Amino acid sequence: MPADFSLEKSNPGSAPPSLRRRLGLGGAIRLNMLDMIGVGPFITLPLMLALVSPAMALLAWGLGAVLALSDGMIWSELGASLPEAGGSYQYLKTIYGEQRWGRLFSFLFAWQVLFSAPLSIASGAIGLAHYGGYLWPVLNKTWWQWGRGAAAGIRFGPSTLAAMGVCLLAMALLARDIGRIERLSKWLWAGVMLALGWIIAAGLGHLNLHQIFSAPAAPAATGVWHGLAGAMLIATYDYWGYYNICFLAGELKDAPRTLPRAVLGSILLVAALYMLMNLGILGVVPAAWFQGPGHVQAHHAVAAVFMQRLYGVWGGRAAALLIIWTAFGSLFSLLLGYSRIPWAAARDRNFFAGFGRLDPSGRFPRCALLTLGLAGAAACMFSLFEVIAALVVVRLALQFLFQAVGLLWLRRRQRQLARPFRMWLYPAPALMAIAGFLYMLLVRSQSGRELAVAALLLGFGVALFLLRARRSESWPFAGSPQPAGEGR
View 1 (cartoon, one colour):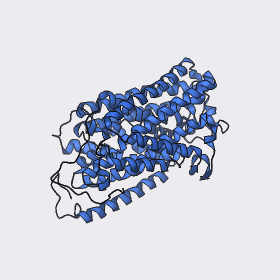
View 2 (cartoon, rainbow, N blue to C red):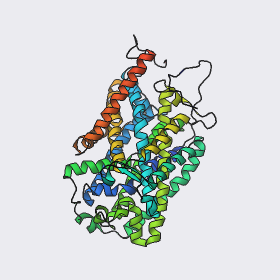
View 3 (cartoon, rainbow, N blue to C red):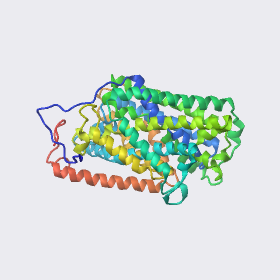
View 4 (cartoon, helix red, strand yellow):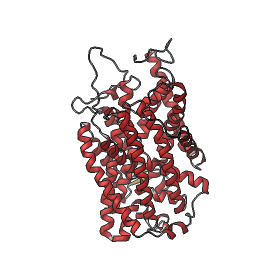
């Protein structure tokens, strides 16, 4: 049945179905960690070592952790004060005024999710397919490709089909009640912890620090500051996901207390795991393996090559299977969280009405889940680096900066707002987050193209918002703003 993309029609005589608050702290942390870890740290090391030396790569991960913790405090304060489904949609609407600029900014956030969420989902599916290619080399064939080599353009082959299939499988598994999803997440999380624990133990047992700090950067690496900006962008992608639980706040038990603990706790846990894992890998596998054209497997299946070097073929195959499990867990969690954003905006009558419908039995947003899952499958045809770069730049430019600046504004504008969690050392973390975001956006040598894409999305989003506003005679075309809680 085609989705209804008209304006939402209300029925005063019946209450709309709502999400169920069934997630506790343990489930919230597990879902966040599934989202954060995923396949990112197992596929991005070669991309990072093409920009900086191994020692600088470790520094980038450390700085990425500081940036994630700073931004995590922004999410924690806003999420504890506004614990409803949709996360940033609710924050931007409240910060900038529900019936004025906040209506525009929250619409633009939901709009960009239709593009950034599929990119995020696709990056996990592509990484999963890379590890599938390690186990079954036939997946590495290319039937058709457009662009400049393996690092750019569009590619279609068996691995593309595998990545698309994984997106569709995750979509099918998420078409159920949140309680059943939480039980499934326990098994996925256990596989992630097993994979990380084994890799960390193996790496630290064979660690060679001299190999890390004596290795130079790749010959093609950029200058130190440009290279560090690019490496931090990749590290930021690897840490992302700590905010996922904010999108699910409408399904959290005792959300004002649970949400900050889940966000900050998952960041600290994952940061420790990332640093230990990358220290171990870089101390065992020479950097040249990730940089030379003769080691294709090391480019696509870092953890598998690492374990094969220590334990032989069986170790590499076992690691690849665990990483595939880990990647699927992340993709599962990503699609779950993102599907709640268009739903929240549509229920607020500030997005296309078709996204606001819940499945009557499982109480999940059918249209949003279907749209993002299918779009994620289509995005699997792009190269991994292009997906990551476009995703990070679009999200930083159209969401994270608005939100970080918005928290400072909200502190001044609504001093009486209940804040169950208050940012530590305010305003230092917010200012650090803003500085870090601007550094990655402006200093990285090849950010112009992604910024142009972000500007294009912004322009289309504003035009679409104005068309809808004129049709509904709402702000900025209404004679006076509507009272909060009313809408057309």
